[in-house]
Amino acid sequence: MMTAHDPLLAGGTAADQRPHAIVIGAGFGGLAAAVRLGARGYRVTVLEKLDQPGGRASQFRQDGFTFDAGPTIITAPFIFEELWELCGRKLSDDVSLVSLDPFYTVRFDDGREFRASANDAAMEAEIAKFSPDDVAGYRSYLLESERCFKAGFLGMIDKSYASIGSMVRALPDLVMRRADRSVYKLVSKYIRNEQLRQALSFHPLFIGGNPMRSSGVLSLISYLEREYGVHYAKGGTHSLVQGIVKLIAGQGGKIRTGAEVGQITVHNGRATGVRLENGETIPAAVVVSNADAGWTYSKLLGNHPRKRWTDRKIARAKYSMSLFVWYFGINRRYEDVPHHTVMMGPRFAGLLHDIFDAKHLAEDFSLYLYRPSASDASMAPEGCDSFYVLAPVPNLDGETDWESMAEPYRRRIEAHLSATVLPGFEDHVVTSKVMTPADFRDRLLSLKGAAFGIEPVITQLAWFRPHNASEEVENLFLVGAGTHPGAGLPGVVSSAKILDKVVPHASTVN
Image (cartoon, rainbow, N blue to C red; front, side, top):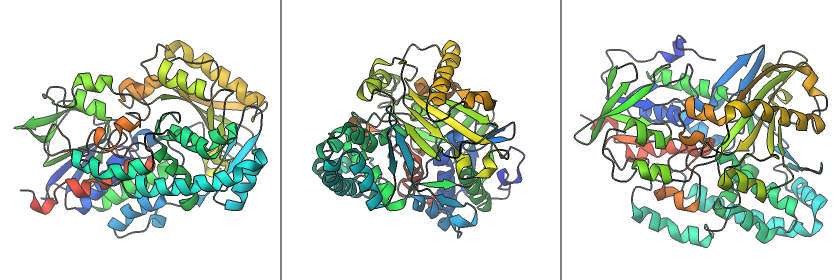
């Protein structure tokens, strides 16, 4: 874990005369933006509210255990490799990625398991285990997933949608792919078995979407996993953060932790820098916000008149669900529990309705169980296991009082894990910590405690999202989950790549 006193966080010198760029927030989007701005000739300062870089991808150590606070699934490693190439280095110089096989296990409430992998024969065997009649449909689904990947990933992920015309030009591909149809409906076109439908359509939850209404284009994730694999970074996902911090330092950039931005300063319609909560003002030629997009407009630009992203529009937008996360370490090992397990509850559509629409904390749940010590002994003391278990829950538009509900909800999850994949583990828990939607609101400054920002529904994609080049203020740019292309590691890192198209090169800045 890096601290404010770490030498890697102290790049840049007073004699550096390059145009100054400020990045607000040291999440993956902000860190990737800093590298790209540095490669384009800027002197970069990243300002981070927390005591370490990473944002949602921070890491903490407790009682000898190491916990990734947030993202754990790494796909599309080529997106990260591009950052290292910009600095004349290789990703493997600083980060060791391990390919996982299988990617994850989907465990249903009746105990049946589906193991996802890149091996076509193995995947067809898994399909046949549930429904032999669906093997042919699965092959057709994969072909459609590839078409969605080409249209929605290769065709859109690093494009700037700054004008309605750019959106119109994308429409033919979206119409061809029936982007108005949900992922679940697309999968259901090819697959008849209900458990297989769930196993092939749950992926939007990883980026804050409801599979029952997220655009079917997001089925591209199936192809993305098959083509590029699912990976784990040794030392946890935060080792990727540390690697990018090292790149920024090598460019002469600077990261300041414990530096919360209170306001983006504006003069004559142009962003001129920021004012910290402590009153310090820092000028800049360019400002990039990796903060929650709604927070950026309603709080950091709260005193500036806005034409599009008004407080009313921000409040009326659809936001992703939130998360309840329980981090725990135990003084024994469960060798038969894989690295990633998705545990489906007894309901699928009904639970999603409760989470996204009714905003009701249901009695049942679906879970994601992460056991990094399955692949990396450094994440736990010898003979021990490190875990976190995550439950999608309503965002703070719901009425759940998390101060009183956190512990009862944790105990319900504990009882379920003990009755299923971790029998008797509760007697071996030696360290524990929980994160609730209130933490997303208060610690990560996410509006409504939404874990992934604005929900990825068809009316909130591409041009309909907050633009990468702000519509409200010149010289202000947005990256991260709340802007295009959206949440997830490939999305937020690619949002920084769009800066190459919309931020002027430093050599043209006076």
